[in-house]
Image (cartoon, rainbow, N blue to C red; front, side, top):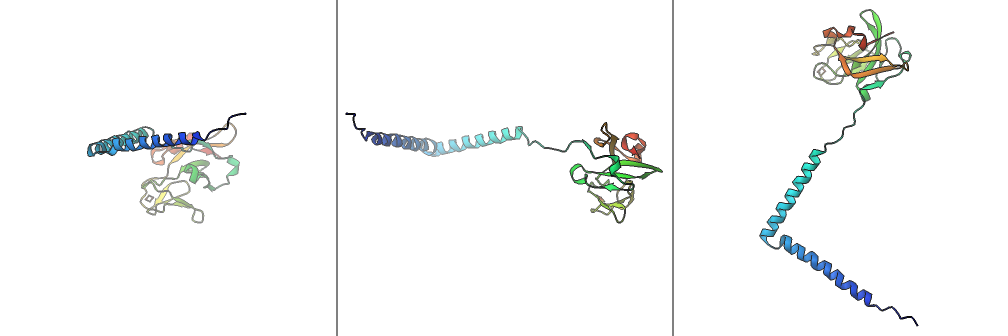
Amino acid sequence: MPERPSFRRSQSVQPAAEGRRGFFLSMVGVLFGSYWATGLTSLVVTHLLWVLGLARFMFPNVLTEPPTVFKVGFPSELGEGQVQTKFKAQFGVWIVESAYEGQMEIYALKTVCTHLGCTPNWLEAEQKFKCPCHGSGFYKDGVNFEGPAPRPLERYAIRVADDGQLEVDKSQTFQEEMGQWSNPACFVLV
Ligand code: FES
């Protein structure tokens, strides 16, 4: 006959639980049993938090920024005199097909006001860029004509890529007042 299992197992659990409880109580006693122990524990915890904060500082947030070089479609998708605003939010650029100094060009205007850096809006009905901050106005070609902006909007580099699409490069800017808009890197002839 096999022996019946005894119920002594439940009796052996109790001492283990008591042992854990005793260990916990003794740790509380060690850490907070006196003013000196409490002070030392606070000091250690403070230093630990400081070290963790320092470690966090050493690993800054990773910023995911849009690429500086990107495609904006085929030149044929633009119409004469059109200002394409769909890349403004993501890339901070207007793609414009318009005349500048007698020749039709496609160019990429930077959506940053040259007064204090606000973002103007394209007003189709008035055919101008208007800054909401202090009222500067810019013609379709980016040249300033009203308000406090001291100079025209800037252009980014633009070219026709191998696949035939327009490609904007935001790492290069061109300023009209410096004579840089005559650089073929900042426009595509239509
Ligand atoms: Fe545009 Fe002042 S920032 S007018």
